[in-house]
Image 1 (cartoon, rainbow, N blue to C red):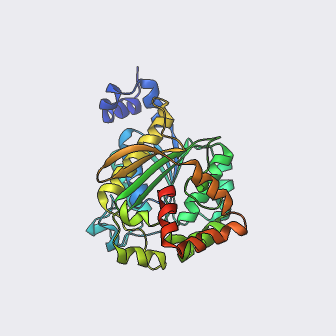
Image 2 (tube, rainbow, N blue to C red):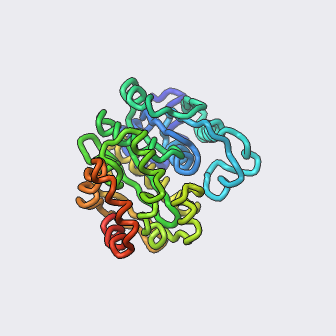
Image 3 (cartoon, rainbow, N blue to C red):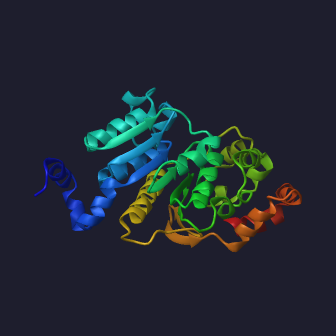
Length: 309
């Protein structure tokens, strides 16, 4: 006979049992999920998992909602402007399921903390959704090293990518053409370089970016443009990947495969071998000169962007 807590849980998530077995739903209930950042992507994932029956969350979040967040962040409303995103997300989870446990850490995760945070806890899945992209890549790579599944959700304008990084699989840095297994500082230096940013011409075509915004991004003055449909679709797909891993019901879309989402449709694509070879090349001193040299030759840039898009 079920106790009152189990009865209440089953009442909330009754329709899930039309898809999941009791054992699979219990895996969701007991899963321990770490989310770094609860704004656009992190917020969608947290709310989707809470509505799926997950009861154990740890969230790192230092930032507060601003008016610029209202176009896409699921818990951002006029009355939450100025409030800590993690506090609002935690309250939203508890409004969905009062029995959920949400540990909120109201500060940034520091790069030097990544190994200990992964090593010293038993996480079922880690979801890096930090504003600092080098931090997320460093976290994804370290998860591969420590054998913890991690999920990437990457909306950039009208382009979205979702990929699971599993133990023993490729690294995020090599799939995304960044210096192979580089440190946080090395990743930041690489990503902050306007010449390295300007090679991403497919952001304009596939991602639908305006020329003005792309130029501002390359100069480090503007972030990725984002629209709610792509953010929410990629966030929901990332939540589904987490659900796959936890329930063991379906096979994750794991690197080098990934979800490729645009307004024209969605498909499962593959990060090519050329990306992974180039990632290793630009880690070397002589290889660091390749992209700046390409930027000066538009025809070569077009060839290069076909390789990495």
